[in-house]
Image (cartoon, rainbow, N blue to C red; front, top):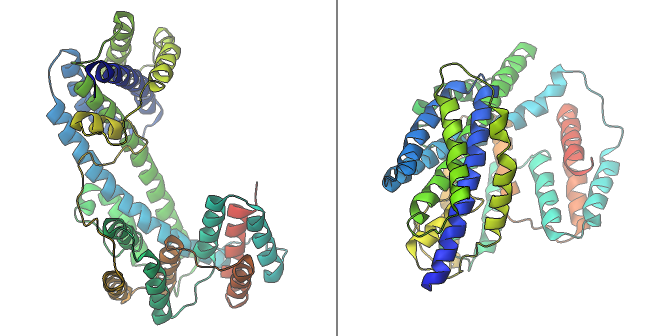
Length: 424
């Protein structure tokens, strides 16, 4: 890349990252002021970030420390996300038990009428992405009544559609399937999140087959609290990672960036004032004089973003890192992960599929049937949709509902699908 073009790109990235960091840093402080539950964790995170920010403002190079903290945060987010996968499964189970213990209005449509309306809504969509998403919702929510062998056969069949695809991509899909099916639970998560682990164990060990109203209420209470705790932590980590990414860009770009003195002074004024708010013992509302600078920061961020265009075949390591750091994927790795890039043949795909099914079979041992069905539904919803026509899809919806002899479960499935696909 030419020196002039590189400086222009570095300057725009610097302006964009500094203005976004200042805005998000302000928001992070507001999160602390508004969230009693997460106040201490936000303070602890800011203490780590603030020391690195101070180093940047003082002209020190702490790029390696920012990188190490970012890697650690990515790992923490991976552990946290594994609980989201587990809680999704148990929410599926509890949703289908709810009508046994809570009086709710029954659907007014017959299964046949409902199937017709669902398919009509999907047929009306001209967007292939929306149609595919709708079909996945259908598969995810409808009652699952497959035997394990039938289910494994479906999984094997659907995975063969990836023959010829890149092996690394297939490995990535199988990893997501394993984690969402609770086959591959990462080590260290219980130590990192003991409260979330306690809720998971309580849900895992619950007697769903013989559950009474008290047992249902206990599980629902634990799940709701755990999901709230998960979202609180996730919000904090997302904001923290975004701050780290922008600070990383600043360290990478500052030596080559051409900056406006007025803008640079404003950036420093905002982040320094916010830093002082974090360091105070007593919480105070953020000064109105500080908020007046935010509109200017938003304008700078927008104008800088319009000037940032990375090359598709960029080879410069710093620029490649900056492109990832400024992308919408806050937790994306900065280094190439490797893996096999050659196309997958049938033998390879079938071997990987058998291995995955064997892992599923081992995890199903001793698992309550209701939980097993939730896992099956989640796995199938992530695999390619193989309906040949909307008529075949309508038949699938109708037959799934009519075959469900548990009316409480059937009504719940209809309610959830109507909420996802029919409500505006």
